[in-house]
Each structure stands twice: as C-alpha cells, then as structure tokens.
Length: 611
Image 1 (tube, rainbow, N blue to C red):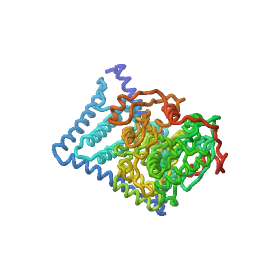
Image 2 (cartoon, rainbow, N blue to C red; image 1 turned 120 degrees about the vertical axis):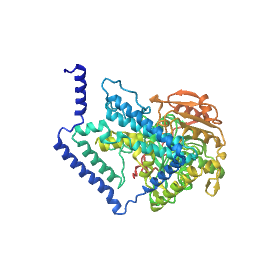
Image 3 (cartoon, rainbow, N blue to C red; image 1 turned 60 degrees about the horizontal axis):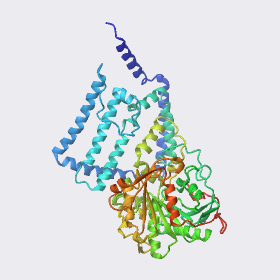
C-alpha cells in the first residue's frame, strides 16, 4: 500500500524533529561530560573550602524553616476538612486529565491541535520556543507545569483564616518554588537547551560549569550570580561620570558637589539622599540617563550623599548616626560651600524614609534648613509594604540580627539575593539558564552592573530599619524614637513632592499614597509609569512611559487614580516646575572648592569600595 504525499511529509517532519535531539558525536559528547564533571568538582571545591576554613557559616536553614512553617499553616486549612481537601485534589486531577486528553489528541493522526488547558501569563518568556507547542512531549510538560503552578497559587488565594502576612509569605514562597521547578530550567525538559547541548556535544555544559565555579569563587563560597558582563564598566570612567568634587567626608558619608553647566543657578542648593542599600550612581548611570546631570542642566547646585560601604567598624552606627553624620553633615557642608542655609532635599527609597524621619527630628530641634522635600518611591507607612515584607517577622528579624552580630554588618550578597528573589523570574532563572546551562557570557549592561555592586548593611542601622519600619511601623504610628525624642511626621510642614511608580514591587504606589496623609504640610502626589528604577530614572529625552497627577492624596487610592490626569513622558519636567514654584531666585553659578578645600574628584572613594 503506497504512502500519500501528506503521510510521507509528516514522517519526514517527525524524523527531522527526532534527529535534532540525537547526539551526533558520542565520543566527543562523553569527553565533554567528563570535562563538565571536572568543572563541577571545582565548583564544589569553591563552595566547600571557605566552609572548611570557617570563613562561611550557612544560614540556609532559617528561610527554609520559615517556608515550611508557612506551608504548614496553609496545609492546615485544606486538610482540616476532608471534603475541602478532596475538592482541591479533584481540581488538580481534572486539570491533569485535560492535559492528558490534549496530548492524546495532539499525537492522533489528522486531529486538529487542541487548545491548551492553561496558557502562560502575558509577558512570560519561558515558553517562546516553537517546540513547546509543536512537540507533544514538551507541550505536555509545559501544560502540566502551568496547571500545577496555577493550582498551587489558587490554594493560597482561596485559603480562609490566614492572616495577611502568612498569606503574603505563602504566595511569595509558592511563586519561588514554581519558578524554580519550571521545565524551562532543566536540560532534558527544555527543547532549546536540549538542542543546544546536542548540537555542541555538551560543550555548553563545560563552559557553564566553569562559569559556575568562577561565580562561587567570586562570592567567596556563595553563588554570586553574574547578570551582565561587568568588565567594560568602571566607576568614574563610564559610570558615575558627572564632574564634581568631594567637599566633605565623615565616617559614614562623602558629600559630592557637582560642577555647574549654567551661568546662573537656583539660589537653593539641592541635596540628594540616596539609599544606602544601593550605591548612589543609579542617579548618574550614564550621561543620557543621569538625573544628576539633568538637574545640573536645569540650574541646580547639586550635592549628593555617597554612603560608606560599611564594615565591622560601623556596626554600631544607627539611624541617628546616619542623620548626624550624613544628612546634617551634608547641610553643614552645603552651608560652608555656598553660604546658603535654605536647601531643597531629595530622598530615594530608604534614603527617603531616613530623610522623612530626620525632618521630623530636625523640626523638633529647630533645624529648618530644608525648605522642600522630594521623595522618590519612598515608604513612610509600611502597612501595605511590598514583597520585602515577606522577609520581616519577629523570627526572621531575630535571625538576621544574630547573623549581623557576628560581623557587625549584613553581607551585601544577602541583600542582593533578597532583591533578586522579588523578581526571580527576571533576575535569577534566566541568568542561571544562560550562564550555567547554555554556557554563554551575559551581555554588558550598566544597570545590571550597578545592581550587582552590592553594599553591606551596618548592624545597628539595618536592625533599626527592619524593626521600626517593616516590623512595627513606628514612624507613622508616632512612636519612633530618635536622639531621645519621639518623632512625628505631623511636624514636617514643608512642601512635599511624593513620587510613586505604578508597578513598584518594593514601595507600592498604594503604600506611598497612604503615607502622604501623615505629613503636616501640603503634599504633591505624583505616580510615574513603570517600576522602582525605570519609573524614577526616566529622562525626558527618552519619551518613555507616563505619569499621573491629581488632587490631594486623601481618601481612596483607586478613586484618586480614576480621577487623575495622565501625561505622556517623564515626570522630571513636572518636578522642576514644582521646585521653581517654591523659590525660583537665581544667583551666579557656584564652583566646587571656591570657599573650601576639596578632597578629590567625584565620584569619590566610598562608592568604589566593593563587597
């Protein structure tokens, strides 16, 4: 019986599909597997050696124990009622049966391709390879995984009786586990990785294991995941390049004054207080994206606090020290450098939280040099804080404090890992696949160079932050104690420009909105498009995203947003207009060093200290 043209074509296609997954050179493949094992041994040695020497102590058990406790509470709800547990299992089984039925239909001759039981969420880039839909095996894996992960997320969402914090943690941990077990993360279950491994006879795995060993060695026993090629970048050479001088240096901060580019400048200098959790040059990443450079061009005399990358010497430096030796020291330095007492101030993220607390303290002490405050994605009320709140409860804070007590600081890699976990689907697993399975070097990217330039946390500072903000929410409760005083945001009566970003997972727009009501003066609430970084670092020339303005930030956030006016492009020009309405008096431009001795060129020395 002769074959039809259609059946012959189908057999040829099937043969071609199978052939792409067959090893062409078994001898070379076996040799590369041996080389991969050798490199894996080096990775294991890089992990074990610092532990054998006592240089690294693992605290992995602490987050794992917390995850198990959280899942136990979730399980209690579903297992307490047999009928409820049966219904949950039935939903999962029904999803699997749909996937199985689809698989049978897909491999049946002349059958139409069925619709997926569940589709990836919009923006999910893991299953873009055509084989995820064309090949019955990989399609089955994809659909089974999506059904399972969606079912697990629903268990959290529909569990009754969970407190908000436990539900938040359960949702976060389910997402982490789901991201980790995705079939896209493994050689044999990812068609693209499978093909590359076969095509290169396993050389990709040799390169990947070599990179893994290098990254564990770079992390001194912990994996320091490389997210970009960092070699092209150097601070002061092609990042953080705005010209200026270091005009002050304390134990915790360098104060940088930048060169003017205009003949006249606003009378009030501008002091920027960045977060100490990251380095300040996110605001001076390159000339095209630099907020600092842009502000200089608008006529600001810009001063920036560059925080120390602390070590054991700074363990006892708490918030009062960062206020006195950072913010107030910056104000003193500005007064010496320019003769001006009235200053506009900006705080970014936790730098903004510190600025808000400092303003409340300084108001009580009669220091009124800061005349306007701008907050970039800053929380002062932590009731609806972002996903970082997952890591904060009494047990976890106590564990962090115990770990910090040993050295006087929290390792920068620990904080970097926590931030990466907030978006593990974007910031962890794609790089694990690219680096250690595909064996490819990541591309140069200045933003990810900055992201990897970790900073340590001084023990007293970080403990105060976790307890007073995330754990106890003391600032807006009016019970935060600083310098022997109970501070209140109601005492902050200067004008405030409060910027949130719509997709912020660290300082949610709702949280920033609710925090606005605690200040004692007028608050201009503005919401930018995008997230915690891109929403802030959005130069007008880029013509990207948008921002919203509306009435006073009171009442329901959803109602405020519904009535807000959307504007295309960057909020930077809107902020500049707001600043000029406070005081637009102009004076001749000021050059660093005219009235005081300088301590070197920008970006200074503190920012160059790496973990």
